[in-house]
Length: 149
Image 1: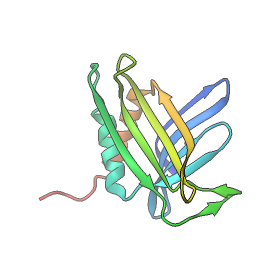
Image 2: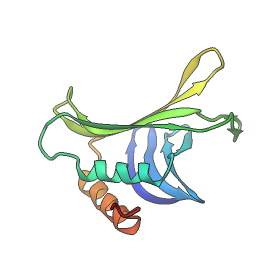
Image 3: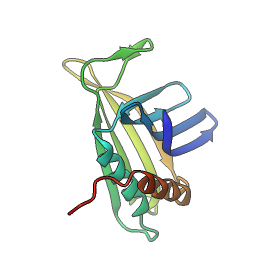
């Protein structure tokens, strides 16, 4: 995967990351925790452009702000010894309950037939906003998308 937008951090448990990258013909979000990682595709490049724009638009002043994406994997893929998530949410925002600090948050869910189980949760609090904005700007410059008429 060729990473375009990434946030990496370390804590006493180990290394964590949220990375968006180009993988073959599509775009994927890779969520990594010390114990495991998983990836899930974006529906199309326009969704990645919306993410980049949401990062560029992240307010400098405390105010309500959140963009959320619903990501899903079709079919019941199983790989690397376990089930893959069928769907996940990914959000970029300012936390209204914590002084409007910026965050990136990922939560996956497993389809267990008659129930839904929680999967991997990865939350980046206080991400390097200036670095993410620079990555988002570079992405939008390299992949501007269709021109609007």
